[in-house]
Image (cartoon, rainbow, N blue to C red; front, top):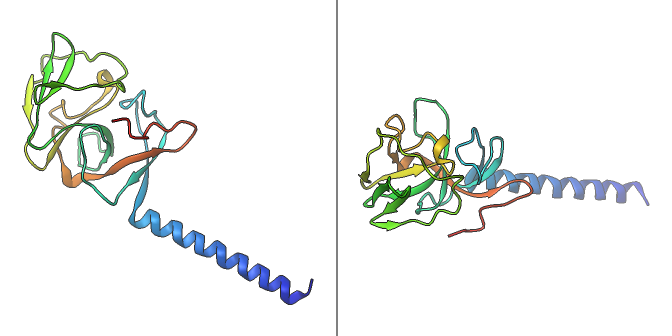
Length: 177
């Protein structure tokens, strides 16, 4: 093989490699982001140290979505939580049966780690104002979330995006709704 052909192959390879790097850069700059789970509040869905991919295109969230939140808080950390209720909905805690109801309907929660214990500080019912969301961790008994007045309701403007994929050997985000 001549030197010109080798040089042409190396140039072509470098061009393809640079195009791929540029394409990945554009995707992660405008359409998707990554975040690392910090803590145990989302177990058994996500574990401390897991890396997740976040859709940053459409920040509209629905009940059941797992979202990344950048709203300033007392622990000074980005939060990853599940949306339980959105603006206009009322969330009620049935303490006697350890259930969560949204607009009077019990929500199915196969993802929670264990039955939720209630504290006396928790309100039994909250109506979420428009533009806000109510979030909780899947590990309800070990989660600092909207039930805690120091976190409270989340302003939708602070939702970085919806978690769409967990990197690794188990993906739990193939729409479980």
